[in-house]
Image (tube, rainbow over all chains, first blue to last red; front, side):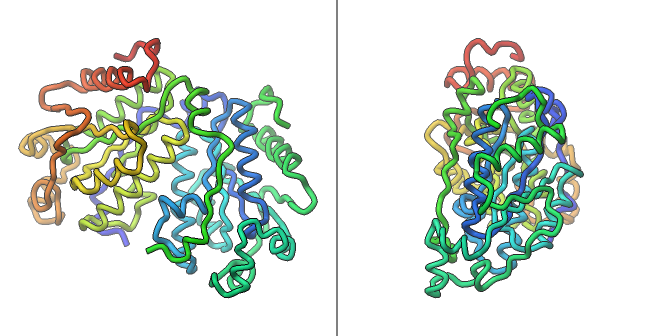
Length: 208
Length: 208
């Protein structure tokens, strides 16, 4: 799978991650939002991105759907393609973390093996798994993109939770039940977590 | 090539590119360094990244070789794989430009068609093609990674300039002859260009 890549050499940047973090005044890491379609991953990530921006922190949301329209164009929804989709998202998140960002990745990421592989590509504590828990009945009731309806009608195959598995995380850093906790409260929980781990300095208040 | 991607919806971020640019105090764009192996693309991009960092500008280098060890792992050097390699680099650069960065992409990018495709994915003036010109004899003399030697020995196939084509840019925004212009001078030229186009405010002096 790596033809001639032995001839590829790493070029070091003259601006290291630590120097960027120092300049930003906050740490960098990735929050990886996993959960069923309709559980509220992208909504929560977008609100957290806004809250961090208002705190003058560098944050950027990588949305699984958005990446499928660009970087991951051409990939389908087989297990292999989903894994490659997630792998590329993870590598992109690594670049953003290296660039000093708090990266927010929102993608169903249904397979435990993929999530473990993701984690292995980051430094310890740099990968923060956020499980956005929501019963599938509620996700199907919300159906913000009409996907459950299409899946029930047979228009979408391999639909997570119906015709493809979702392996719930066993030990996520953070679990948020989106049926019980509001988006604003969830953002507060995440900001508190980032502060407790030293990714955000204590004096960056507001937004929570 | 886009199985079921009609079911993929775009999630809007609540932090737009303009808001990030305003917060940064400078514009965002990509400088795409193209040229033969050994022409000095990565060296120049790395020095410009450092200069921009010292001017408190958000910049990030995407190096073709580095990406082959992560995001583009598994891709080889056939024309198809090279095109996909460049396409993914371009999509990643788009994300960085959207995130408010001056992205610096360094990759041989030997095919005109690939460069045109890249340009089409950015807004007008956002894609700045930098042709790092250097005679192949000089590149081979420098041979910083020993690749020309390996290519001559038959250890690397499809080597740009020897056994694979390099289609020189006809109308790059900037052309730098690395045999005649020093790295420091080249950085000055690029900073002046960025100021002249309004990507850098005039008051961010120094480094040039």
